[in-house]
Figure 1 (cartoon, helix red, strand yellow):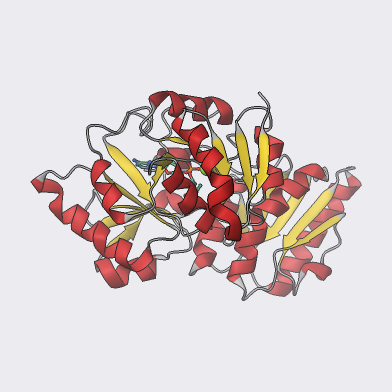
Figure 2 (cartoon, helix red, strand yellow; figure 1 turned 90 degrees about the horizontal axis):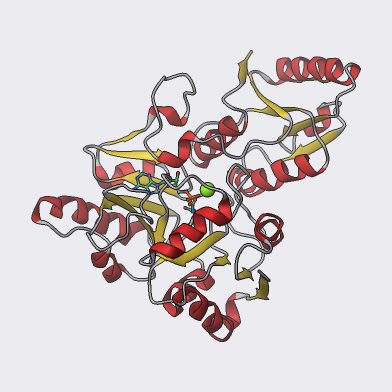
Length: 354
Ligand code: TXA
Ligand code: MG
């Protein structure tokens, strides 16, 4: 298959998106930018499109897809409107008024019509309205319902640039829409509204504190930060070892000076064993490490910068042949919670606390 690449910055959306919309309506696959990461879209109501998405990603088919919509009223075709679910829809409306369009995905009981191929066999459906203008225009041009996981091969970091989509998907999908670098760089927050209290299954830009203001009570799935809880994560996709770099990644948490000397000692040992070494650190401290490759995630207090750079850095470390990688820990609050969750997953939860 020949993958067509079109560049589509926000100003000229409509013209270049008509063709992409036709591809989706005909059952094809189109990768597109969102404010979080690039998505790999197919028609959510076409079971064949969902099967093709799993095949292109090499993703297990029990891992459900997020359905992307472009206006609130479209949710009623996706979600069960049975009277016993009225409270869940009311909560969804409250959150939508505050955070949609934007980086929040809600889990709700699904309507019969939504194919089980799209929901990985579950009776619930994940719904999100992205804020990226190109994404919204594409959803509209395709008929309103785009099932889209992140546009990476299963197990690789989610793409934050079109070139990373092509690295993984060239020849496997019909089209890639290049909209430049994404804004946030980590996937949307997922909140499950089918349980009481509501539960965060994946932390993201919309934080627990922000959701608590509107919902009152809210919990976070404990597997998000605890690799040894013995429980299975509640979002099926979170059980897979995502984002894993080819090298061995270890996170080190502790007071600055101790972290420098611990990591530098380990780097020295790895070098002596003939390994290519790397460090992932904040802008302020990166220069303190004696590694073959040093990657800065940006200023320590600039959570947005670190989020945006993480996946790119993980991909670059693979390309540059890093074998032993140490990362500084980041503060686990606000967007930092999402960053630490992804970093922990990349490290297979290997973290040293000094
Ligand atoms: O920011 C995002 O959410 C991006 C962009 C493209 O919108 N999409 C994304 O999709 O991250 P994906 O497929 O890579 O991750 C979706 C996660 C998976 O962990 C999946 O298991 C979970 O959402 N999920 C989907 N439907 C679910 C459901 N009904 N119940 C529980 N978890 C669900
Ligand atoms: Mg993904």
